[in-house]
Image 1: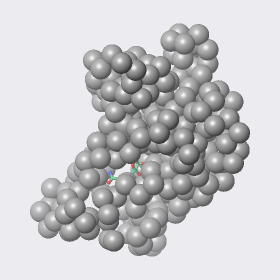
Image 2: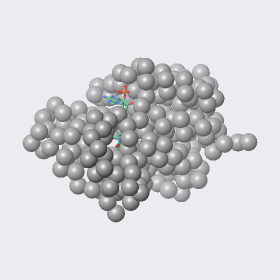
Image 3: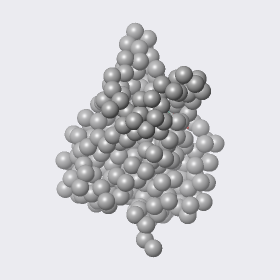
Image 4: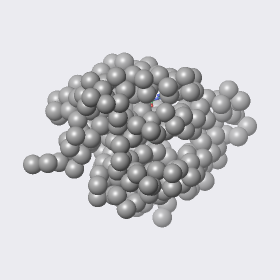
Length: 257
Ligand SMILES: NC(=O)c1ccc[n+]([C@@H]2O[C@H](COP(=O)([O-])OP(=O)(O)OC[C@H]3O[C@@H](n4cnc5c(N)ncnc54)[C@H](OP(=O)(O)O)[C@@H]3O)[C@@H](O)[C@H]2O)c1
């Protein structure tokens, strides 16, 4: 039986761990044929994700590149992925591009140095911008671009102003680009996760009061799991979401409603 994403070729930044890894597995379960598992430096985690994807019957390639390096890194990601795409499909193509890699420094306005600000914007905004630019002409008709934001663009986060601003700009980029890709049936959307149980939050989530506070923010009284967000990503990647573009899809579990 044909699956929702049969023969689709996908590239997911930051898919060695967390939400990106869960998205990669969700796409593999839906029949994707090749998934690029991009990461910064955690080779063991990336190779582990590659093996999990392969166990589900899809091909996978690990792609190392530090997005702190800006356009040099995004060009490098596309060059590495292109080789794998040609080997799998015969052409330098992709169908689903997911900008998921991100960092979230918990630093107030006063605590944020210029270096941290620049690094946060480079990874969370400049990387997605130039990676979309690099892949734009190679995304096949009816493809998908999915950017991963944060609930901190809807709920004020004085604890993370640089992070929130970088993701707010990513949402605006999503809106700005949707018309450009529309004529080819390519949708451009953002998924907005809330607090999700990943390494990003591991340090503070072990503190019972902190975890309870995060759980209380959702109308479901729990924190999100990576698969909760990954399933929304997989839906947007599918043909069922063909009429949705330029949108921010809230996948925060009803945070602070
Ligand atoms: N977890 C949450 O509560 C939450 C909430 C809202 C939004 N989000 C967003 O969801 C996305 C995924 O978050 P997550 O919690 O799954 O993160 P995570 O578990 O911390 O994983 C981060 C991923 O990004 C990669 N990465 C980190 N720095 C990078 C760099 N300099 N260059 C390239 N790749 C880099 C990591 O690669 P390595 O493995 O090599 O380090 C890893 O694959 C992020 O954009 C985040 O802002 C998360």
